[in-house]
Length: 435
Image (cartoon, rainbow, N blue to C red):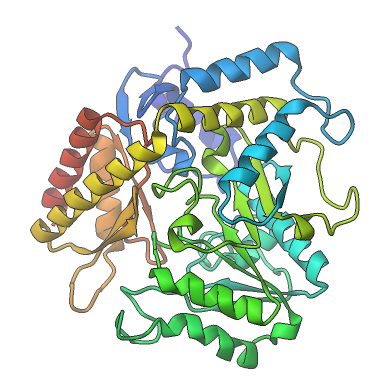
């Protein structure tokens, strides 16, 4: 038997050969996965409520995705789309142009990761507007590259000691109704946090210098914060009035995660540029920048691109993902999953005083843990205890949030009712155990 067929042996070797900074949340090493179940090298099954951080919306090893990758691998694995192109990126671009909200003609560029998509979205926005300023938000997460971590809000672990950062990035408060930065209450506030953008142009960066505002429709790492519907409608109107582009970072919220193919559809807003990644290709490294054609076509030929962009295996996997959404009513399943999760978690809130807030959009949902509901004291320690309790009971669960006190639910949308019920019972038991 392979001496590395144990979690401990692999973890011991990892400590010697993998950089310490490239950390993992668990010490379980996965052998295979199907649907919403992952199995480690010791044969232990785990219900997956993390989905590879929102990457496995169609489920692990979906047969259509596996077959698409296998078929393409037998043909060719790389020619470089910039040198000798092929059909799959063209077909996939058409799918994305049709799926991203808004009636404007659109165009696409492909990249390899979410952070790379964000970098290119910023480049394109600056090129088109011939302006340099970028406005990002508190609690935002946009990646770990230079521009990505500059746009990201949380210092530890993402930015600490890793500067200096990119210039001309400005940060304003986000629409967090549970912890309103303006001390107001919705709906009496009339969404003043959106109107604040007008003042921001006066006190931080002039609209005449601002290329774009970049925002996650539902913040991911920031704690699954979903603003009121009017928020983005107001922001977009202010941006349009001032000649500022809106970039919607749908890397985590896109591809059905919210019960809509893209979250901006819920808000009724057409972003100028949208970034897509994570569940786009069911685990294959692929991202896209989808924008209004006039904006995307403004960049001169070869001004954007990359050696591995539009990898043929990844593009075929993404085409299979779209086929799964279309033939298996995955958005319908997502909506039903979101409704069930909302009911269950609101029930948990009535039962467990540790839960201060339940929020999100559709099945992109989370609960914020607090020591005291009135004071809203973050309970990051309890979040860690709950994640560990669930792992010990064979459930993968993820924490997030500025204070590390938010438990998020990112299970594959194909999860069965029995698997969901079993996993939520473990969460319920865990909340009882750690209170």
